[in-house]
Length: 463
Image 1 (cartoon, rainbow, N blue to C red):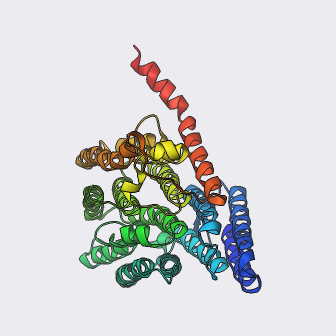
Image 2 (spheres, rainbow, N blue to C red):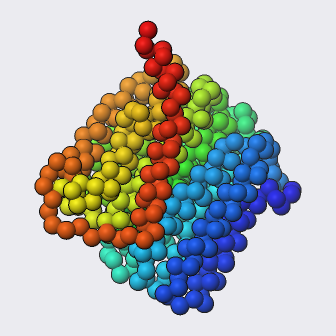
Image 3 (cartoon, rainbow, N blue to C red):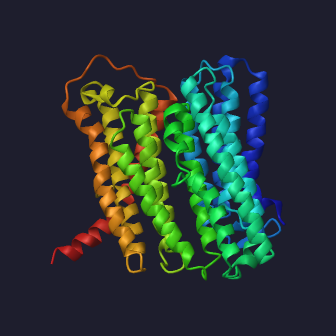
């Protein structure tokens, strides 16, 4: 096994260790340097991943897959982690454990990478556990803030249960199929009730990482209570990794017809629960959390049609990329406004902070899927992959949920644009502002990349 096959992951690991050691020796006022080192390490990981783009093989004794999905994860996960790390220097400046935050962020990123590339159930377990344990720490990082401790505790309790199901499920599958290796399991999982139970338990562990029903309750609590950089990270990066891991897992058992139906039902329940609950929220961060739950439901549409829709994987990866960018933009606005979270506080914000309102509007409309934004193309790809596969009803449910979601996003945007301002608005500035506009630029760039699609669509409709 060439050690270079795991170079991107090793870059993240070694950077995490270096950041931790640097945080131990630097005075608190210099802990912002740890953010710079973390960004450099993540950037190096992305560069190394680009050097391996196009690889198609198993490595690390067959437990790790090098393929287009892994390449996407190696670029998207560190890239979004860089944006989340950029939100932290000003936000955590007074925390004496400021530098250690970046080490936890990097270890959690490493867990996500291990999860996304896993080609063995035991490797999957290791990735999920590393991502989860570090995630608990990130969620409860404000130890003197009760709501942060509550978020961390809920995340831990739900995660402990879901991860226990995951391990038990792996034992069931290994006992029935005789292996944990994906290459051996592929198409070879018997149509046995115990095998279906085992796969369902494994799926439950991955549903936890995605924030899907019924293990979704941690998402709004973490979105509201965790430090903003951690909330942005935890509602995006583990989901991206979980989506790829779930896709690989479902691809192993094409003979179990009940599995796609189960995932389709979970998708419908997740998007419906997320959207309906978001309607009644008065806290912006909690609203974003429930919105994140609903977005998971849309992503699961692609997983439900694995094996019957050739475009399922590209649709999944494209949608998750745009979702991640839009969610980071939304949290970057909250960070820039120094944690302002009550929806009522956003009334008249356009006159005081027009840039923040424009960015938040762009993020929300992209999450809805309003054309010509990139979010529309992401959902369009999901709907196209789902229609004609026997799950057309799921696309109808998704369209109805999309209409519902527009209502609660407009509850924030409309007063911010049309109402009168209520007092001065303080901003955080610094790297948080830079991250905000870099994220917006990337999101707009993704929209511009779809210009050929709109041109061809216009040419087709014009006659």
